[in-house]
Each structure stands twice: as C-alpha cells, then as structure tokens.
Length: 257
Image 1 (cartoon, rainbow, N blue to C red):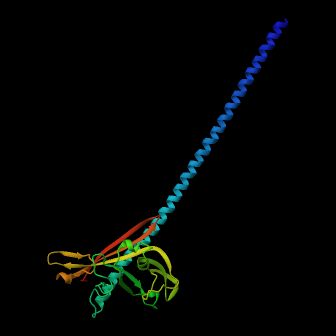
Image 2 (image 1 turned 90 degrees about the vertical axis):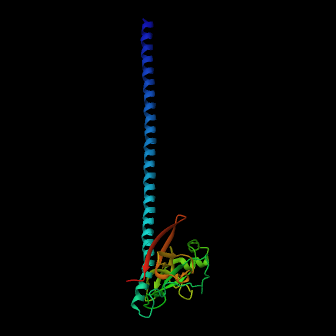
Image 3 (image 1 turned 135 degrees about the vertical axis):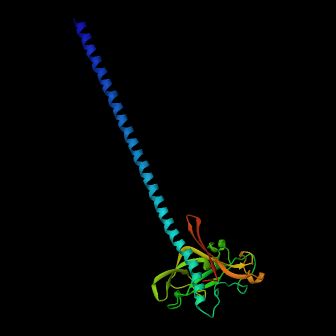
C-alpha cells in the first residue's frame, strides 16, 4: 500500500517537474522571440531613417545644383545680350562701325600668338560711375583652364565674378567683375562662385562659304575676306563638390538688321 502511494506520489512529482520544464522552456522561447522582434524593428527603423536622410541630402544637392544652373544659364545668356546690345547701339550711331568696341586685342596689349584665344570679359561701369550702365569689352586672351584656376592671379582677377554694388544704390548688387577700370577692388564687393569668359571670333565671307577665325589676332582682312559677323560664345562655370560645371551660350551676330 505504501509502495503504491509512493509510486503515485512519484508520478505526480514527475508530472509536476515535466510541466515546470515545459513552462520554463516555453518562457525562454517567448523571451527570445521578443528580443529578436525588437532587433528587427530597430533595424527596419534605422534603414528607414538612413533612406530618408539620403533622400533629403540628395534633394538638397539637386536644389543647389538647379539654383546654380539657373544663375549660370542667365549669366551666359547675359554675356550674349551684352555683345548684341553694343552692336545694336552702334547701328544707331552714324559715327560708329557696327562692331566698334566689340573686337579688340590686335596685338597691342596681348601677343598675337596661337597660344592665346579671342577671349574677353565685360565690365559694367555702374559699379564705379554714377548712372552709367554701359559695358566695356576687355580682351584677356586667356584659356578657360587659366580662368578657373584660383591660383592663377590674372585669371582669378579677370574671370571671377563678384557681387558688386552699383554706385547709385550700394544696397543693390549685380554680378560684375570686382575690379574697376584701374584695377582697384571695388568697395563692398564679395566673391561669388561663378566664372565667365566671352569668346568673340570674326565670321568671314570667303565668296564660297562662311569661315570662323578662332585663332587669336586673326582677321578677315588678313585673308582678303569680307567680315560679315561675329561668333559670340559666353562660357560660365562654377565649382560644385570638387568638379567644374559649365554652361555655354552661343550666338552669331551679323552686320544686318
């Protein structure tokens, strides 16, 4: 009888231990699953945040690029319109030729060699002369690589555009070269991120076809051709994350209305 009671008691104890073991194993499994779910959830959140931050940074870069591209496009187009305006003004002045003040550099200030280009810059006189918004077209004869080289002192002074106040209203600033006709830095000017060179090449009528002279100092008259127009290329660039972005506008201006 006692043995039977012992056996029953032993069976109950085994069942109790077995059930407790199952309970412990079940509890450990549930706890492990919870930690894994938390880790997965954190990983998903981190991936989402990284994706969002990458998208935000990309959008900021795109907005900055589009902003600079818009400014550069306008500056390049402005270069063309400056030359066009001078040509049109010459037409209205009976004492001037149609291309007066448009093509310099006959070797007087810049050596006429193949190592130079027919490159020019324009100065807006409003920054140092009261109510004078006319432009000076000045030959520099340099290559684009020298223009954008900040270590090239001549290129930096000649090609780098500044925010420059006009003399009649110092609070109003325009994109201009930061130096006046005497080479002095204009008071109140600040450096921008843009460079500009304007290339002006003569267009000749050979009697058979049009020919554009791109070598510095070449003239249609040197080949006994008639000069009928000018090829104008306005090149604007800016530095963006270590590289140079470039925008060009081109127009052919002829001696006819």
